[in-house]
Length: 250
Image 1: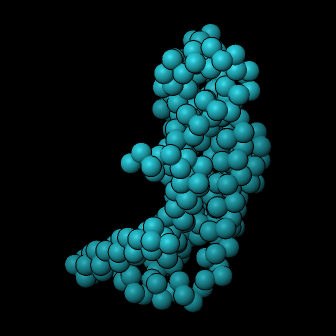
Image 2 (image 1 turned 30 degrees about the vertical axis):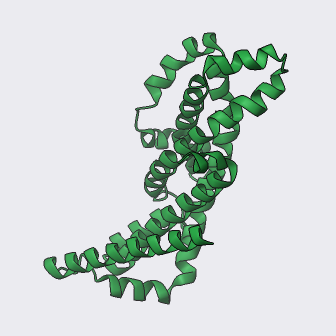
Image 3 (image 1 turned 45 degrees about the vertical axis):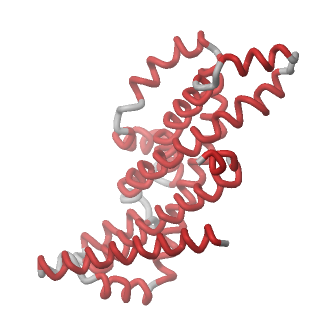
């Protein structure tokens, strides 16, 4: 309970600091392009259902992409980590694709999979999966070779080696990779949701911008920030439950 209370207080302090800086910027610039945070928050309170629908659509797309990326990326990363031949064959390809801005492939995905949710989810998968693969591979490679020798000396079957050695070792790397990926995927989804969709926080923000409704636009930006905070805090709680030994080591 103390941890939850401390976390809540720190998040509230950070949010209030952001609102104060926003208000100062609004007062200094004196332009309708940057509305007052009070006006923006008041607008959000008048349309909570509408904003929630747009946020839920974006969260569902990210969640679907994360699940698929985990199902494909974790096994692939483990194979690259334990099999030197696969690492030599596929690591150069990963290093070439990884730094390329994945949003550049959105037109390709739309041509192949249509303009609906499928192409947007595949774009986010394409963003997340390489980060997951590389994070898992690095996690496996960071396991001291002595640990594998100990498992072999006890004649441990492969299943136990993966369950009791490799999986616990890669879990922190998976969560680290997910944190990076979710931030990038939200930014990319913001761009992708402007095509052939009527729900999504990206669509909401750009729609307000085209109408020059800056209060609505900033309400979407604020909501996008809150979505990011919620997703990151869910990851923190999930990591604390799945990797409790990290907390004890700190």
